[in-house]
Amino acid sequence: MRRYGKNPDEDDIRVRPNRKGNRPRTHTRPKHEDAVEGMVLTVDRGRLTCLVDGRTVVAMKARELGRKAAVVGDVVSIVGDLSGEKDTLARIVRIGERRTVLRRTADDDDPYERVVVANADQLAIVTALADPEPRPRMIDRCLVAAYDGGLTPLLVLTKSDLAPPDKLLEAYTPLGVPYIVTSREELESGGAADRVREQLNDRVTAFVGHSGVGKTTLVNALVPKDRRRTTGIVNAVTGRGRHTTTSALALPLPGDRGWVVDTPGVRSFGLHHVDPSRVINAFPDLVPGTEDCPRGCTHDQNQPECALDAWVAEGHADPARLDSLRRLLATRERREGD
Image (cartoon, rainbow, N blue to C red; front, side, top):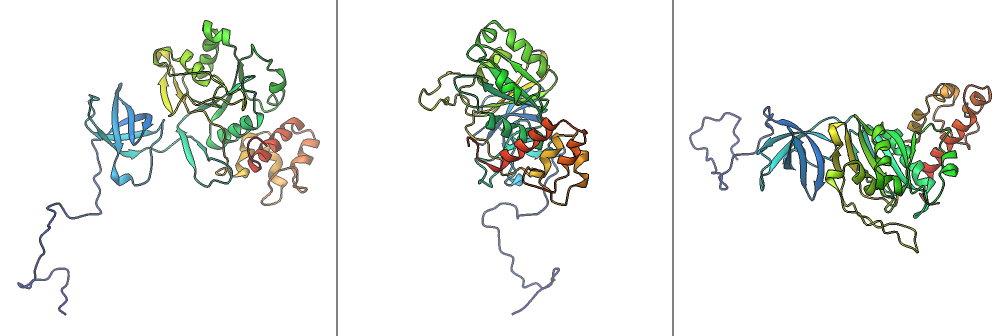
């Protein structure tokens, strides 16, 4: 068999024609230097609605991105038809680096990580005080996900006309989580929306919560010009609501003072992706006390050599803060609802 080098000059070399008539494959990818920056507002079956220079553009992910997916809140680079006209389609060629990421898994045994929102500054955890009953373990899990992803948590308690908030707030006062209490009457009058909006101005805030807690109703009050469908139905047997929001959507606050990201209602919030050692970072007053902990210390109550007990006993931190830390660490190890 004759072998030829890279630059053969023999006249009898046969070159096979390209039957498909397209260009040969190459590892060189275009730089897309003319790409325009945009923000992903929502994702629906492979089509991404993006905000580009004040107009909405529908785009799809370019093949060269592989399995890397863009989510709501991502800053992306887009090429193609950016007119935003009907039946036009652009391409997302780059996904920018994310400042923060809110992730969850289906449950604690599921290794598949789902990115809910990117680049949000704040996580508003919406919980009803009644109808459906509050689930503190779910709140704890959302707090862990917020701290792990770099988001500041905000607790929003709805339906205070049905039950008082005092007992629930007692568990979260040591954590220092800011909170807002609202009622149906306040939402209808607009007073609650004004108080909540004060906490959202100049930030990107993702809203999470069970179905039926009034999350989308609150979002509609905050952004009245972009109302989303609501039902407010809660199953009398299970005490759980029905999903009314099926996809995450970013909406601008009036006056362009910030963004609200309404997410679908969730019934579980898995934390398989969270490294328990990172939860301590949400407690800066306790971090210095970990310097004398043994290597690999989990800081939980079953760790007899944990130095945090002595640190708190010496008066360096509030014992309630250590209890809160260990409660969140325990949340990572058990299923929601237990």
